[in-house]
View: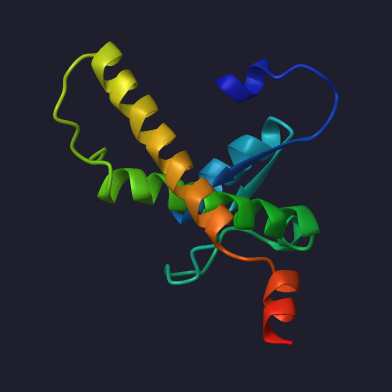
Length: 127
């Protein structure tokens, strides 16, 4: 397991979606001294397996916000950049397509960031 190979004495966190909100998953990671920052599955019978030991820390909510930003990127890659069903086969071709699609996402994101005026500029334009 990759998490077992992390060196050092510091506490490690791992993020995951709500499909990993199970007692077995959480127990295994706590045995490895890893804090699971997993989205809570409150719709499941019996509720979420994540208790207040994890959710009370601000790091958990920060991890969930950062995970959402990552998911936005992969969502764009799947819907816009045809990464859901890649038309190519082979690790090198798929890797090339993924790199190209990720670069395209970055260009679109940069264009959107540069096009939106800052609040200060909007205030000046309004006065």
